[in-house]
Length: 89
Image (cartoon, rainbow, N blue to C red):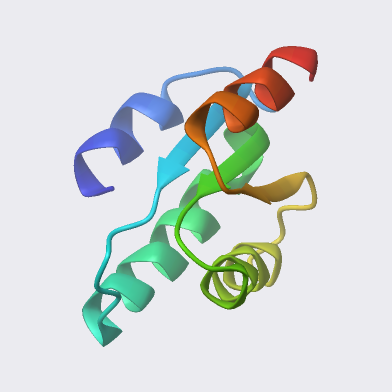
């Protein structure tokens, strides 16, 4: 997330379609990094698609991102479905 943050910040506002694959293990450090990442990149992101295992985990990640100001965030159980959705935005 930290490596990509600068790249995203170089894009025009509301132009980035972001696909995130969640790690299998979510630690406190991952959550804190996600919060910072989402807050910093909110002006640049048009839509975010989250792909991970488990509806409860995905809902928690989506909520964390939405709390940082993003509104167009959806969770998916497959990368292909996430990509298809991002392509329609």
